[in-house]
Amino acid sequence: MLGIPAATESSEWALFANPAGTAHLEQPVAGTGCHNDFGIRELSSAMVFGCLPTSLAVFSAAYTYSGYQSYNIQKISATLSRSMAPWLNLGARFHYATAIQKGAETNYCFTMDAGLLLTPHPSLRLGCYTVNPAQSNWQRQQERTMWPTIFAASLAYLPHKDVKLELGVEKDTEYEPRMSMMTQYAAVEYLILRGAVSARPLGLALGTTVRLQSLDIDMGINHHEVLGFSSSIGFSYHFGSPNR
Image (tube, rainbow, N blue to C red; front, side, top):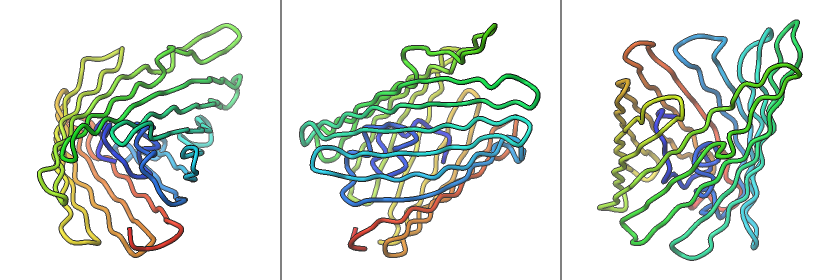
């Protein structure tokens, strides 16, 4: 939601970043959210998702719709994550996407992502993930367009249980690496505050999580130095005990 790699994220929203992060979930979660890029309606996206922890692994599924009536991309995702050791989580995510353009042939693509999350010390986390490492393409009869291939990594330091400092880097094969820094602070039990800055191009972001027993409300806003503001909001419900 802040436009950063978030490779050490361990909440349900890791489903859209590092798939290994969802291995920390202990309760079933269902949620929905929406995102708007730069205040342009045609660049909006919405998603619904669910996560189910089991004794074997955490299984998750999501549906994402991006675009508008004349052109949109619809994506179905399935994620599998597992704690291999107290200090190691692994995750894999599979996508089947279709691109629908009015008056044109429907395009489709199948991709896979993978990630890991290391916790060598309670105050230190290292996460990394790759999006489409196989460099799968959109498939059309006479045209092939590559799905983006991205590598992202984050190093997080937790000097206190309520404070998280994170340094991240993201590299798209088509662009230069982008660095970011994020600070997270749990002001009170039911309120988490976040701030982030990223470079090349310069981006500033603010976010918050409000916890109302079993319901979490996540909000974020970020500013691109050229294109302007983007915003996100998400709702997730944790089934089971509200004492999380």
